[in-house]
Image (tube, rainbow, N blue to C red):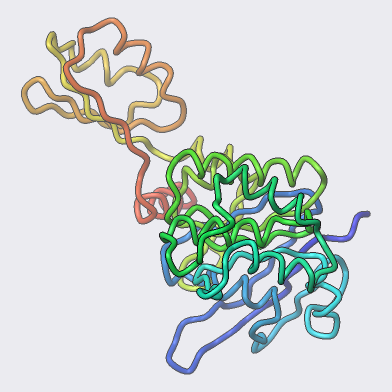
Length: 298
């Protein structure tokens, strides 16, 4: 049986002022992309810092590739790339100088490899960091984490401050890492972001893992909120009868629907009518958690 890439057993960390994590139990396989999903302050960053041995647990055990996170922290760090949620850079340097410095400490990668990775993110390596926007600073952190193709990537809110095109590049890099058998643990408060990158997701709330599910299963059970305005409103009963439609209400020509699972039946029906406006959104985290709790007690 293959050793877990990350193993947390009964991991607890309490802070004097409150917060932290409580009794985390988690196994992440080599080559897996695992997402920690939860609102800000839920414990995502604390969990990542514990794995990195930047802080120590009050109780429990953490192992990375079969190595104890405390006694073998130096050996573990040689095999990982880390993007912190609160990124600190050397503002007086250029990205080329900053990344070259850390590449030297790691014993690689080459300047040409760094340049190629930076180019994929459209990152200018020659400007002084202090003159750069939040998005460009985030790119520096991503290149620093990704360079050298580490065996383990720990990415705390990796797409924060990035435009959609760069976000898609992050998604590609994460899936490339997994395709090469490397492991990724990422945190986010955005369900749709986790959905395009992760294989499984852990829902974390108030420092506890309330569920661990495959992303496909989580998305299938989540509800979409649909607002549609018709120029020729259909019979309400026809929409209510569609598979997955759980509620349907109207206010004039506008219909408000909640749809669980696939949207295909609803989209097929809507295509038969002339629409004036259509909006579809995923539930917020509070709605997702509520949906999960209600579903688990049916």
